[in-house]
Length: 138
Image (cartoon, rainbow, N blue to C red):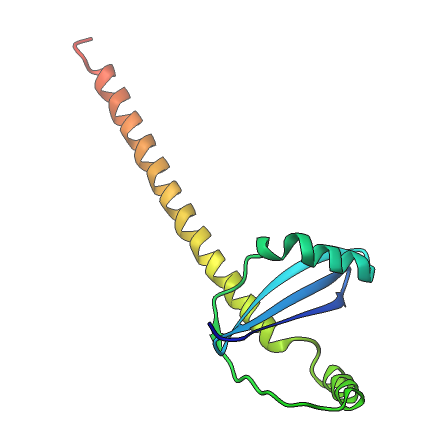
């Protein structure tokens, strides 16, 4: 079994605090989004991870590049600050989450279409039965 990298990013997206869990396993990225509501404290986030990590529904995996490099923590902080100023948080993860949302939307559409067709067919059969009952020798 290969290495698994996990990362949690918490950010404010009007009007809620959002947490994005990123998981890189075998060179594939999958993500999950959690809405915290009010700003979570560190201990609340830690408790959430301990209790609910295995309940999270991760998106389908997407291939990604995994780079392993040791960097100075101060350099990492500077790079993070620059990245946030430019693009925002977790763009790749947000794309993966959007993909998951679109797939769920397609599934809902298919189910809804099937339900409407069966309902329409049922109503048609009821009307046909009522017509036959009307014309039974009266």
